[in-house]
Amino acid sequence: MQYEEMNPLKIKGMELGPIATNAFLLWRDGMTQAVLVDAPPNCAEEVNNVLAEENLTLSEIWLTHGHWDHMAGADELNGEGIRIIGHIDDRIMFEQPSIMANFAIPGINMDSIKVTHWVKEGEVLDFFGSPVEVRHCPGHCPGNVVFWFKNDSCCFVGDVIFRESVGRYDLPGGDFEKLEVSIQEKIFSLPPETKLLVGHGPPTTVSHEMQSNPFVRPKTL
Image (cartoon, rainbow, N blue to C red; front, side, top):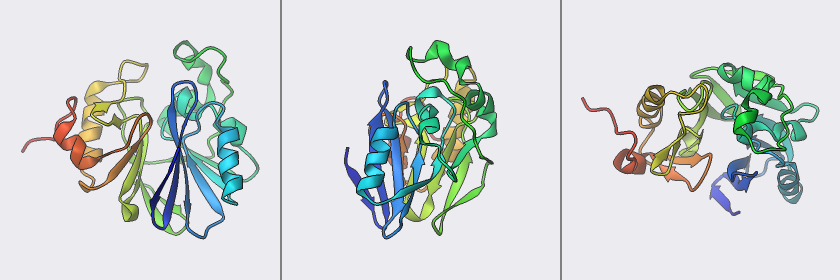
């Protein structure tokens, strides 16, 4: 686990949970509050350790989608005043996660997650004074969203796309045609140098995926 510094944005990437899900703790240099992107199962100890080391408090949890490996740990971290963000198209998975039990590791906490703010396509979130654009990217699941930090040239994409791969589309609510359109229209339209911080595995860039991803190719005119 290493810091990735994109001054003044600080990113702590953590590979957590039984299937190595990436979670990202974000804060600004000189700030005392942080945002967590995705909350894998049993992530609280690791996240709280980083918060303590950096003298930070957790203010918000941004969930890219409602699959158990990205959100089951939010309940452990949910304290007074913490805002949890998600997309309403995954509401049933947030509120009734047991419907995904057949696709989860046995013994995983399946408590419901109370999302306090439902984001929409094109909504701009305020990350301590910097704009973050929400892009709705269905296909891996109905409510997958990505968080684009335009000023910092990075985007947190959940399981929409990986380095030279794409998210599964064979789970309930998955649809390859929708996933392909999401990647072509919402990911490949980002500036080529944008760093993609993905839900599993190493980061990549828009330009690399446009050139090398074998599953989705850019639209041709």
